[in-house]
Amino acid sequence: MDDPQIRMVDLYGQYLNIKNEVDVAMAEVLTSTAFINGPQVERFATQLASYLDVPHVIPCANGTDALQIAFMALGLKPGDEVIVPAFTYIAPAEAAALLGLVPVVVDVDPHNFNMTFHALEQAWSPKTKAIVPVHLFGQCAPMEPIMEWAKAKGLFVVEDTAQALGAKYLTGQYKNRRAGTIGHIGCTSFFPSKNLGCFGDGGAMMTKDAHLAAQMRMITRHGQRMKYIHEVLGCNSRLDTLQAAILEVKLKYLDQYEAARYRAAQEYTQALRDIDGLACPLEESYSTHVYHQYTLRVLNGWRDELVRHLTSFKIPSAIYYPVSVQKQEAFTSIIRKSGTLFNSEQLCSEVLSLPMHTELTVEIQDRVITQIRNFFNNI
Ligand SMILES: *Cc1c(COP(=O)(O)O)cnc(C)c1O
Image (cartoon, rainbow, N blue to C red):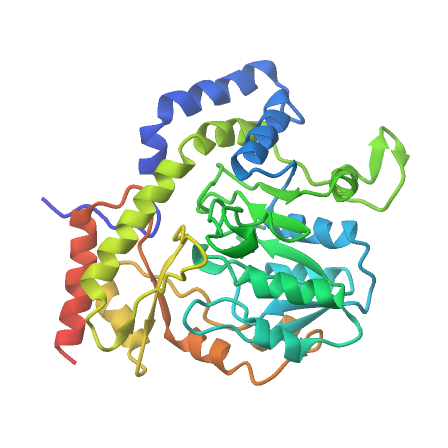
């Protein structure tokens, strides 16, 4: 018999393990036909708020909307500068640019892929109004120095925790805080492959600040608190009841999912860390790592060759991200670059993410590991 197919993520396997619960929850929504703003939406928001230990969670349609709504609620105006990392998913720069804000692109730490405090200092201008630390691949950016500096400069901090929901800060004054609950606003996504994913699009904002929470809630509803009374400019950004019902079920498993990802990550690192041509992900002492991605750096220019080798053995891998923000055609005339952005460019040519999901078994990982070792033994 053929070996089972290896997948980057195994959403079907994950669904099968909770199928009964999810099917019941979905059937309830179908029967009630409360497809928009059914009780599951607020219920899920309350449960997530409790999990994150944050007073306010405001659901919305997706993670990109969450960032845009956060910028709107903070009252940012065209021309205001928002500092974003150069090596990340495009959403923070895109949401900023759509509002006429200027994304200021800063370099990242090549060891943990996150924004550094030093890069911020260099990027600041009198127009700077906000910073978006993206907790890339599942580990927090260094929030203590970032927050301290933001406070001193009077800047807003919007955390993009789409890849790090559930990650915990471990040291200093933010000890035990969850990613997304340290800055003024946290934004997350429930895209199916995210650590807490639904069966379509979904997102949320989180905050300690009651005023910001009210603003964001209003913005997601066309700027209205009362129906047909539009107080501020808003948009239409809702989490579907069906998605909320699925998320209610899956939130109960989030810790278990995290443990499964963590186990898989340790397995990879144990098996690959002695290979000279690879850098395994670094776990910082100040944050837990929830391994949204298990991302290697393939050194000495061998990355694309390794991908070809793995592909020939039907082993999937992915490059997050092949092109930096500053190299994206749509953004070259919009952004302001800060510094050389050398690390970000280097990472675009080195990174390789391996299959990582909650149903990964040691047997599957062994097949991935064996082919990676074979490749390095033969070069
Ligand atoms: C997935 C993701 C987003 C956007 O989420 P969507 O729900 O797809 O809009 C934003 N930022 C980061 C870092 C992401 O990984």
